[in-house]
Image 1 (cartoon, rainbow, N blue to C red):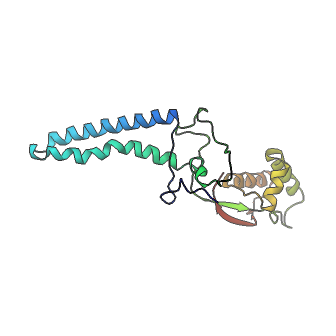
Image 2 (cartoon, rainbow, N blue to C red; image 1 turned 120 degrees about the vertical axis):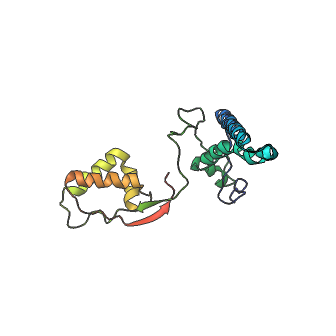
Image 3 (cartoon, rainbow, N blue to C red; image 1 turned 180 degrees about the horizontal axis):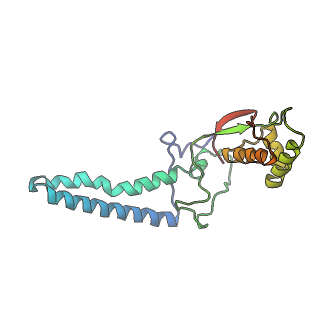
Length: 194
């Protein structure tokens, strides 16, 4: 049975901040308060006295806007939403260390977008009869050297999907050995890039 407690509103996930995240959220809230205060002061200067009471209703939502954008950005990371889709039978989950370098910043090395991308599946037919004999062993050895033998054969059979970055790496290996024609993978699927 899938855990749906975190999936209360469709595909939106809840961001649960750690200690650093709480301070960042507080900072964005204070920035929003400052922004709303400046906006309200400008509004009160430029408008007649009779509508100053309404400036609160106009600028109060601005207080929460930066914090809302921060939480929205954080909840777009796949690593934040994966826990909501874990089976109830699983007791432990491996997660990213919140104290690790760069986690929680714009340049987080572990960030994975929730948008699906076009992934290649399989490369059994990538080496065709027109290719010179030296191409196949060159590409195979380089991919095994960079990724390992198990991954190479999983990519080849389609058990492991081929990301856009890896597709470009494979194409560059073909170009390196002198094959400049189009490379055709066995198929394509839409999936998350993990």
